[in-house]
Every structure is written in C-alpha cells, then in structure tokens.
Image (spheres, rainbow over the protein chains, first blue to last red):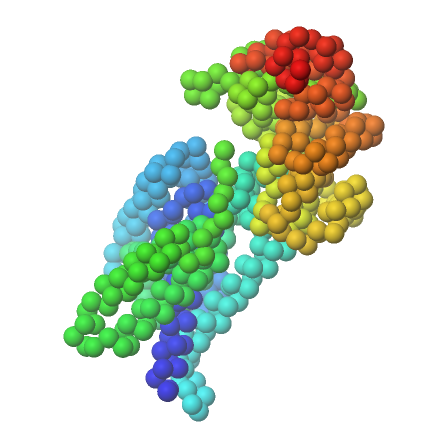
Length: 295
Length: 233
C-alpha cells in the first residue's frame, strides 16, 4: 500500500512539472500558433538564475524568485527580438525561428558560462522525508505538488479575473476581433510570453530541486516531454495541456515502477507506445482546443 | 464624417476593391449593396484597419490610412464583423468587458455595461452564460453591444441580419434606426437590400470592387439595376 501511495505522489509531482511546461507551450501556441522549442532554454536560463543567485549568496527563496524573473525576462526578450519580427511568417517559419533561438541560447550558455553542469546548492531540508505514519513522502515531491497547485491556481485566477487574462483567452479564439476592441496585439502577445516564461521558471526550480545542478542542455528533455504532453492534451488547449502533463507523468512513473527489470531500459518506448494508443483513441487530444478562426 | 476616396484592397494578386470612393455624413445611415465578392466587407475591413489598403480614408478630417485596427477604434470607429464573431468560450459579461476595456475603466466601464444591458435585456438574462451558447440573434445583439462598448461615433455593421429568423431581422433593423436616432452614424453592409434601402439615407452599389451606382435609399430602390439584381421583382 505504502509503495503505491508513494508512486502516486511521485507521479503527481513529475506530472505537475510536465503540466507547467506544457501549459507554457500551450499559452503561446494558442495565441500565435508558435510551437516554441526555445521553451527549454527558458528553463535553463531560470536554472542559471538560481546558480548566480546562489553564487552571490542570496538565500534560497530569492534564488527561486531570480529563476522566475530570469525566465520571464528571457521570454520577453526572445519575443521582442526574435518572434515579433517574424510575426507575419507561417507556422514553419516560426518553428524554425524557435529552433534558431534555442540553438543560439545553448551556444551562449556553453561558451559564456560553461559546458559542464554547475551546482545549485539546495537547502539541507530538501533531502528530508515526511513521515505521515502510513506514508513516507519526500520533501521535494511534496513541495513540487504544492508549487504546481499554487501556479495553476494563480494562472486560473489571472485568466478568469483580469482584463489581460480575458484578453489572452479571447485572443486564442479570435485575435482580429480582439484588435477591433482596441486591445493591443503586441501587449497581449508579450503577456502570453511572460506567462510562459514564468511557468518555465517554476518548472525549472522544481526540476533543479531534484538534481541540484544546471547545464546548457538541461531544458531539452523536459520540454520534449512537455511537447508530447501538450499533444496528448490537445495542442493549444490549456486544460488539455495540464491533463496531458499529468497523464504523461503518471504513465512514466507507472511504467518505471511496475515494468519488469529487463524491460526498464525500454520505459520510454512503452510510454510513447501508450501515447500513440491515446492518440488513436482521441486524435485531437484528450481535451482539444475549440476550433479557432483566423481569417 | 467619413470620406473614402480611391480605396484599393489587394489580397496577393487578387484585387478585391478597385478604387471605391464614398462618403458617410454625420448622423446618417449609409448602406453598401452588392453580390458576394463585390468588395463590401473588404471596404469595411480596410476602414477598420484590419486589411492593408491604398487610397485615402479620412475620419472627421484626420487621415486613417495605414493605422492599425487598435488605433482606429479608439478614434471612434467600431466594426461589428460579419458572422458576429463573439468570443464563444467567454461569458457575455467578459465579451462586453473586453469591448470596453481599452476605452473606459472602473465606474465608467460599469456604466457602459449597464447601458448595453438596458438596451438588450436578453443579454442581462444571459449575462453569465458562455457566448457560444447563445442563439444567432442573441450573438448578433452581443456583437453589436460589444462594439458599442467602445463608445464609437461611427458604427460599421457587416451583414447584421445574415442567417437570422425574420422576426429577429426586424429587431436588428429597429435597433439600427434607434441607434441613428441616438446620434450614431452607421455604415451598413447588407444582403437584405429591400430592408436596408428602407432605412438608408444613402446607398452605394458595388460590383467587382467598384461603385457602379449611388443615390438615396428611395432612388436606389427604384433603379432597374437594384430591382433586377437585389430585389425580388
């Protein structure tokens, strides 16, 4: 019983990270039809934010804030200088731009900082385990579930209660008409990038809390997974991204825990095989985005 | 109030509007008639800043050409686009809110919402429902109310009666007359030529991107061209 509950906690905590990343991809995709493969580098920027904050001996909570602020700034800069000039381009052009941004940032990390992993000191309490009697839960998975829940709540409130949040939802449905209301397209798009940066920042903190270091390629694997999660959920659908993220996290942890040892090296093949089954069952994803007009 | 001269709109190699000139005097209803593809919607979209155009567009004396849509609506021109295009997954409340958010805030924004709910009582009943769940007629009311939230002096209406039941069409035309009485200037694109010419002060007939005829509503209703092409006679 104990092992099952622990695996559930692990699944939710890993799924939460994928959900945050997939949500970041979906927020941008729903508005500008850009699949931002540089999203992983936003995570890496956030990781270096933590590293630098620790290097000047800021306490850990400030390092977390630094991570999020760095990722938001990086997201806004890539929007302003790479994606905005390409606004009129088609989906392929935007996709290639995001590959370019991703490659450029990685080279900057490798040559400007270091190709090797940089340690990010974590508070000593992070190694601890909470004993609930029937269940032993690591501090890190627990914190990561709490952070995910807080982020999702904050985003939901933002989207449903603020003018900019409502404008983002409207932009995903009909951007032209939103402009007819006098709401500035550039502003809405910039806010979407800022939100996706903040989500990448939070995800980076949770990712680093499990490994304690940052390297130039850190963002690649999680964002590839997040992309898979976004597709499972239904590309461009925000609730779908969250559902897809958790589904992928749960699948990975389940296969990790219950596959026979001999099959473990092929875990990802099993996970992706299952993803294919989901997509055969629901080709548009679990919770597809409503059909949008772009005339 | 609005002076358009030699307006041209091209989509790639295809010319949709080939030198349209028209004028909309303050306080009047002007109607654009024409078959599908005659360039009516493109003309409205060009005035609203949604599509790139050449030629001159002047509103209250100031040139508008080349300005973005966000800017044109703040100068007092609102477009209610063809097909209503409400934000379907947002509530009626949020649709109205976004219509006015760039132009008013706080108490003034609330006052404008109240004014629209008084004008369209059905929207008050549906206030918290998703706009996508409204009937076609209700969505058209919402789309117009959302445009009015910007506080325009000139309203561009693109096919407001399209696809609506006859009873609702009556309501839409009553509404347009009522808006005129309250001092709003209206440029209307309509398929329903008979009804449109009844309320129009002036009309233009477009064919393949050019004005082929213009006159008062009554003159156009009597003209052979309009009778044959647009009125069932």
